[in-house]
Length: 70
Image (cartoon, rainbow, N blue to C red; front, top):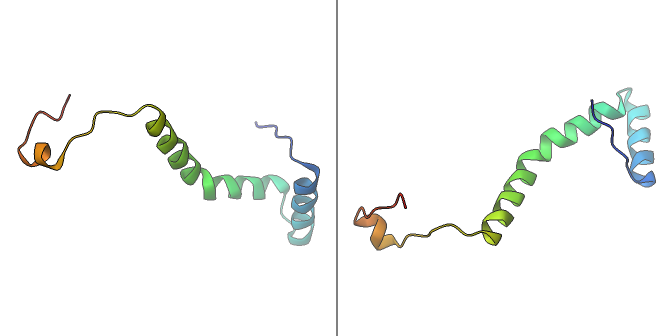
């Protein structure tokens, strides 16, 4: 179970959509999460990598089969 507080304007829009289509607000929130969760995970993963960079290898190191495991 998830409880979420939405800004009033978003809640009104969501309620209107639900009323117009006969679906629940929970249905549309779930659909939005499913649609955008991958994108959000990718964005935060990229930000984390920028903040905490890992080792980088040059093309030459990779081509020479250097120890790329660390």
